[in-house]
Length: 300
Image 1 (tube, helix red, strand yellow):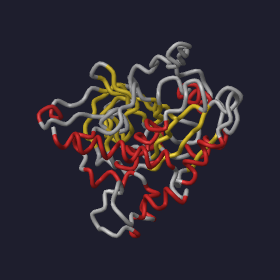
Image 2 (cartoon, rainbow, N blue to C red):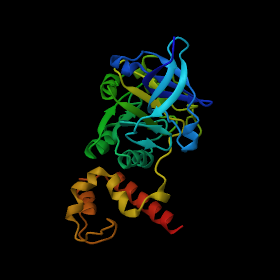
Image 3 (cartoon, rainbow, N blue to C red):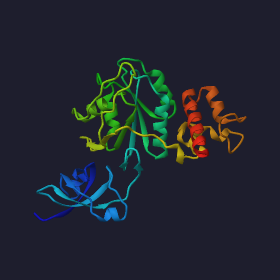
Image 4 (tube, one colour):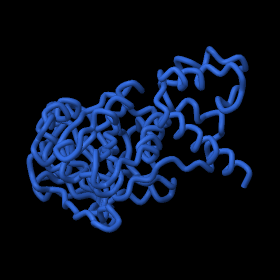
């Protein structure tokens, strides 16, 4: 069979080969197949690198399922760590216990999603061993869809599945919080390797080796990430930090000064909201830490 042009999405890249899934475009006259393809040499010339998540065209042989990546179509967005394109949603996973909840890391991940203009959902896992009402209320009040769940006993896994429908969702969270267990639940297969928790450090070992998209029956894709990296503060201006906390927007108009840092300034709408309990104290403390890091990075 002669080579044809197909449209698909890169679901994995290993050793210079890209695996392109064309299933979501089969209704447009394409094939329901995964093609193994290197990239054309011209991508190196123009310093372009195909990424997992890219929508591409390939010139391929449907019989051998081999071809070449011919064109990278315009991207909706790009995450640098992990290097993945066209993400529509981030699921930030935090454990109710074992390991202890790290709210600052959770807030940094949500800030990364906000900075990339990606919708986010908060999954509070391991509710079978610890009540998560307090944590859930923090993020519900911040305006995030928050799902108390347990990958162990299946609690609310169906609610998460509904949020994944039709989305390209990257899962992020501290090691040991149960990302891989959740991914196995929603994909319906033991595809993701889980790691044990160290009783001494209360940290799990990273089990993900490379970034890969896994197609769901719903039509969406899920992505586990090998050591998700949050915001690099060296490129962030201090004035940007407030925009990473979407619930703050409701109160910035109440500040006396237009350049308010929301720290020690008088008549600050945000600090007043914290005092009233309208903004969670932990969220404000995370903002202060991020602002301090951004200011320190700017001085170096």
